[in-house]
Image 1 (cartoon, rainbow, N blue to C red):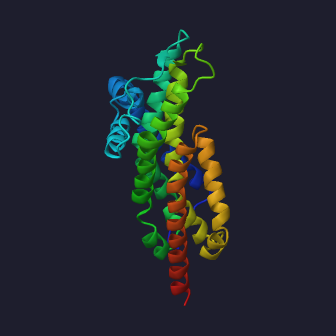
Image 2 (tube, one colour; image 1 turned 180 degrees about the vertical axis):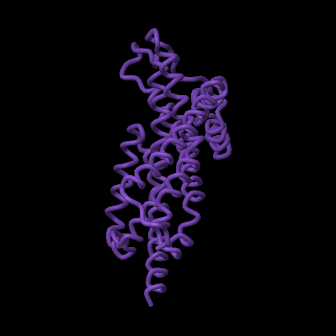
Length: 269
């Protein structure tokens, strides 16, 4: 362990408080930045999956035409309209969305502050092995957000927005409901994509082994399907799109766990 002057519990608490304060300041500034640029956040980003010209829909349309299916997968018009049904609905949604966007923007810095707090308690070799923690965690989180935004969210919006129990009932979706769906899907995927990092640390502290993960591979696949069913709408296409990267991440995590065990045995010997 690094040689430091021994600190009392209150000293650790004081250090943690300043890490928390700095993280909160960056989160607040990022949220204010997102609040100011609401046209970009809403018109170009969050409301993008409602636009028939959205990148995902154009790709699906091109695939449909390439396979000789005509316009079967093309979206010509949005299947629903958005509306605001409460007096403070748009303002409350603006505040909530700004905080979410601020969290995404400041996520790498928050991770860095968390790492600065825990790194003094690690051994030198552990610090060297985990020094890419902030970079890789941030990359996985952003990849998960992008996957949720470009794959899961459009499928969710298109399915839920066009589903009807009767032709007599028109779909008029509230702004709050639409934004919450997009944010929840994106954030859930961002967190799910942190699986390799979680496996790394669980293996480091001895709670997980590659043998255990291989033995329960089939259970993990079932779990991936269940998890994908929770964070996606009830259609099989969206669930497959989400479960497939989860299974790939699980296999990558097994390799990571195996590498951690190998390095640990090397240092022990």
